Amino acid sequence: MRVVVKPGKEACTEAAINSLSALAREELTDIIDILVNSISLQEAKEVLLDDMVLQGNSFSVSIRENFQFVVAGLIGESEDDEMLMIEVISYS
Image 1 (cartoon, helix red, strand yellow):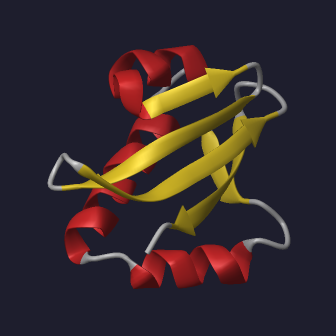
Image 2 (cartoon, one colour):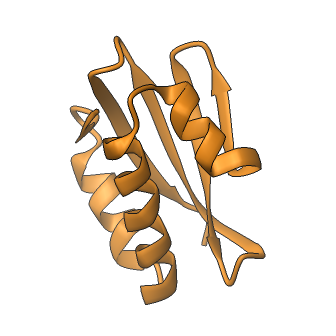
């Protein structure tokens, strides 16, 4: 799937990513790689398990630091299984 930042959310997504620690940014990169390489959101859900909440065409993924602390969220939606529009929200 193709992953793009939601229009109008570029600046806040960039700021959220820049506020993350190196470990959390690495986790975010892994999550995006999973989304890009998945055929569907359901397939991504099977890999991400409880870190991903999937409701119809909308989803969210918890970004954890040290596998414990949720430090950010990746929120997205899909019109089809070819393109996902995402934004990142920092919780710090």
